[in-house]
Image 1 (cartoon, each protein chain N blue to C red):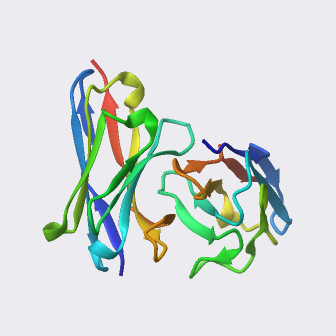
Image 2 (cartoon, each protein chain N blue to C red; image 1 turned 90 degrees about the vertical axis):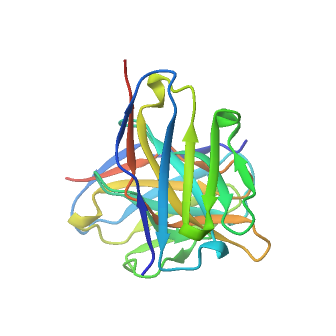
Length: 123
Length: 107
């Protein structure tokens, strides 16, 4: 069955970087994308961007452009999200999710989610 | 960017009640709308895709409708296990965007 498993919780100091991993199994990694969504404590869902498992094309929400990099390692069916220059308001649970695509490669919905990775940014 | 507005932000209903949640897009998004359920302490789960299609395994008491700018998620008979926050999400345009969520509780 489809599974998406994320790396464990992280505690970082302001200004540091964090890299979260997302290992997929149970499907052909290159026929879907991976999206990243974060949720600050007590808040709603915020879309960060997505990466194609087929050709590594990315699209980032403007808010995260230049500070977030999404990559994949297809040999390991794993996606990564790196965020730099962390601030206290980056404290959140970060989710990766498998992205269903149309035949034209357009993102549609997120049909399998990881368990979430808590990132705490604190001095 | 497309803004998604959900209402109400929270509701309390009795077991067996019919519950309706609405989602309004800031522009026409056709039927490019999904609904997710997030139970406390869990990751979101896809319930409805393309405005009205039930995801595999989701109970038939959940249904979605609408197109253009106005959408509805309905729970025909609320069950205790439906306590959760529900989010709509559009995919008509990047950046993708979610509504603010509707928290459903049992009265």
